[in-house]
Amino acid sequence: MKSVFFISQTEGWTVGYDSQGSLPYYNSVILKTTDGGINWNSQTSPVNIGLTSVFFSDSSNGWAVGYNGIILRTTDGGDTWEVSNSNTGQTLNSIYFLNSSIGYIVGTAGKILSTVDGGATWNAQNSNTFNALNSVVFTSLQTGIIVGDGGIILYTSDGGITWTSQNSSTTSSLYSTSFPSAQIGYAVGMFGTILKTTDGGNTWENQASPVSGFLYSVDFVSTTEGWATGGNGVIIHTTDGGTTWSNVTSGTSSWLYSIDFVSDNLGWVVGNTGVINSTLVTSNVESDLYLNSVKIYPNPSKEYIIIDFDNYASLNGYKLVIKNSLGQEMYQREIMQKSLQIGLTPWAASGIYFVQLIDSLNNTVQSTRIVIE
Image (cartoon, rainbow, N blue to C red; front, side, top):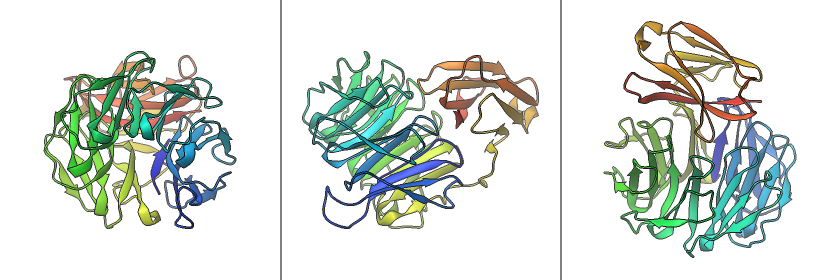
């Protein structure tokens, strides 16, 4: 498996290909879980072409990309998938959506594609490079970052109309990037390379890495806590914004291509040989989601969420913030009571949101993904 993505603590997808045939015509594999990865059910792909990346904006709307320019689209949670025309034969390596309408894809030979209609149609953008582009993320409607081969980092502040190259201070290929906030981001790649930015991607600095092999995927749940995965079962973890990284026992020697966390204690890893590793889970998967001292339910939700602060006395001076997938703040409240019921209908369209616990120094100490239907 090449990519994994969860929209909640129970519902997620992983995509890849089996070893029958030869690339790009390996058989597509799409799997879905509704019980946090205890069971995975196969979904039918309309093509027999290897898939490399998957993304969902909510429980219904999702996309997958792969070799030969293949783009798949679903509007029913993957029960059915259809092919979208990419107008390219390049391998597509990464897909990211800001909402159910606006999305971006990157791939080999500097390929960048964008859509404003949910993936029904795609338009090419000019990257000014022929390097393979491996990962894309947006922190707002206008601001996006792409990383790729040869240490290339591209930056846009106008929604992809123009992309400019940033100084990465490395020639090592970069395979993945994660931005837990608009200003703070990370990128990982060959030779254990780890980069960090604190100014939204304008400048980058190297971090000390405990590994020297390939790092394929990185995911941060706050500005300080994140994980990266790589070859030979490598998983590394930081809780201080990358100042120090420590090795985590994965229990496998597989190459781990993708990692996705929905909270600071619940995540999944996938890799070759079809491994789906959820051994990093430190709490039970239940109908409710725990952020250490915070309990959020129901998730997914339609009209309201209830947030219980189990250790209310320890949260003096903290505030609760809810942001949409664009990083826009939709709700904020100082924590002054043990339980909150928050109505969603005045401001929340369907999609993915992030519930964040902010301390008195304005640090994001905990974050989790919720889905509003």
